[in-house]
Image (cartoon, rainbow, N blue to C red; front, side, top):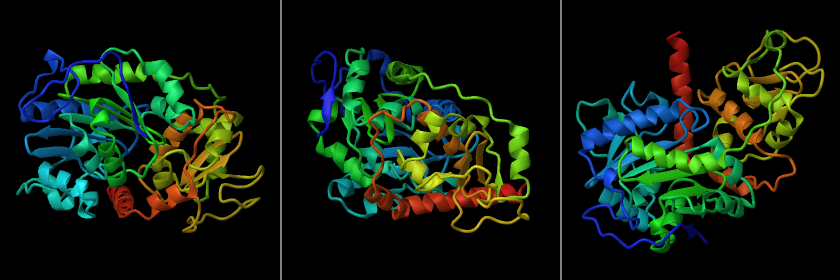
Amino acid sequence: MIEIRHTVAKPVVKEPRMVSHVRPDPALAPVPVADGLDALRRLSARLGADPRRTQGAGGNTSIKDGGTLWIKASGTWLAHALDRPIMVPVALAPLLDACRQGKPEAEKAAGFVVAQPGTPAAALRPSIETTVHAVIPWRVVIHLHCVETLAHAVRTDARARLAERLDGLRGVHWTLVPYIRPGLPLARAIMAARPFGERANVHILANHGLIVSARHGGPRRKTLLERVIAPLAVTPRAPPQADLADLAALAKGSAYRLPDDPAAHAIAMDPATLAVARGAPLYPDHVIFLGDRIDVADRGADPDGVPGDRPPRIAAPDAPPMRVMPGRGVLLRRDGWTVGMDAMARCLADVAARLSPTDPIRRLTATDIHALTHWEAETYRQALNKETQNRTTRNG
């Protein structure tokens, strides 16, 4: 059951379009969609550039304008919001109707895209979370895979910990949503919680992330987001530094390479972080970008998993995307298994360093993992990331 937590009861306020039952802040009055979309792009780019907030193609943002929902396209990065078109217009009313009825076409949402002839966005496919954004009755919805939130949301005692930190915060009306596959199942779970859950402007998604909603995407929107995230902060363990020269020498001639972000090496350099990271996946993007297991090499093994020297080779198709060399560092597949792999290696290090092996951790089950790996929307997103990686490689 989804339980809504809030501070002080506020009167219901009827608004002409998107209805929210939280008293609106006068400073958050609706703005023309051009201004709102530009503000959302700027906010999206800032959030996407911060690996503590979201990583790679993870996370998505949206804004509603009358009957149109503008949402981040599947496989695109929030960090690129100011550099390229990443937003897709979707017809809101028919999508909501399909979502309520559980129609399969609501899952992809591609059939609800509003034609925009002559614009690059016309070829993009809506985010896999489009239905989630559609069912939340706020004009602006921001969904992030925030590491501070995940450090609580992957715990079995998440509800109590969140209550300690979020209850009583001004303007914060939060709810914890038990884990369910992203996309249409999650959207329908949020819908099922209304009208009781309709007050929520903050959704904590167990083993998934954070949704914060408001009436526009300007600076005040970020204020609400930071107001929620600040009390969730957990100090990560500080690991010893990896010897990058040693690790590069170890990887030379193998099918593996060093990650772009040295912070990923925390997984290998701190035993407690490794103990957390090597278990079953904690959240969906771990499965999609790093696979369903973290491979830990034996002491003395080379990066390809075989003791001793081996000639250069290409990784086998079933080779793990990431190999952990305990006490030395982390290596990723050289063939660019997905373009988001580096970002997700850093994310796993950040989340695992904020947890203890003795914490009551709720991991994704085999059933959860199967639902993700056999989900067409995620197969599409993976293919798009691989295509982006190949295009980047060809372009030098």
